[in-house]
Length: 316
Image 1: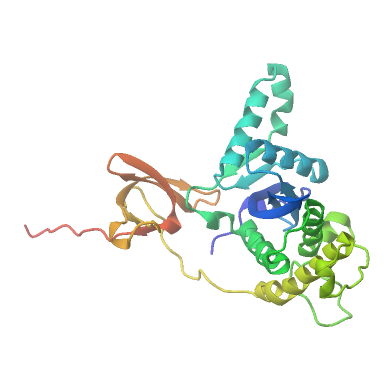
Image 2: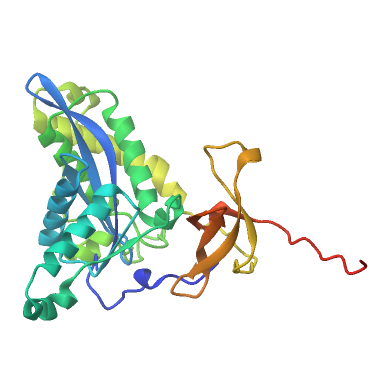
């Protein structure tokens, strides 16, 4: 297994200095007699593993930029933002660059250090964002079980997301001792707020309150349902797993590879030649450019199958 990336080792920087971002949803909300769609957005600190959840009205660039502004106002400006190649994220990066380039040269020199460095994962590589993709899977599965098919108001959905944020940020970051005399484990909430649990004691409502007309009781009952599923299904997955024990050689230029494409049958997967490799900060190759006939593709190494070289016949 390779060393941790620098984004996970920002020990002398504030939370969310290096963050991953992604969207999930949609979820239906009711406004009067009509329904509309809303999407969730998650920012995850890659060092402290704290999460920040918010609600987006759409998946366009403007909605993402407003969500980013709210995130910066509450958590501070991140140094780097890692994401997939979603059109809203790419568009937001372009908008910020255009706004910066429109400034005068004197302002550009003063604000150059204040820019957010966007890093986009290569295509077909969701595992590059595994740190925050795993959080999204946890949040989505629990929300799906909690909400079911019912449609709630936007205020209730926003309250649930913020309650979920507090629950996820209360998970222990390491080993939890069963001895009551041992100190409490470190959680993201302790790093963000300096105290173990920032929430006020809640009243436990019965499941019948899920259909209550009192929206306060309804959102609390939904948050309790999320907490039950969080403990039952997510916390057991924090056990240590061992893998990647064997060292493998990096992909090199000139290698012949088979490109994995889940949309095609195996017999039709394209074969190409590696024309360039893109190493990470640790020097290990995780992305490569593949030449297939007259086209070039950028793919993660996990989606490439190295084919054995054909030995040269020295007898003839």
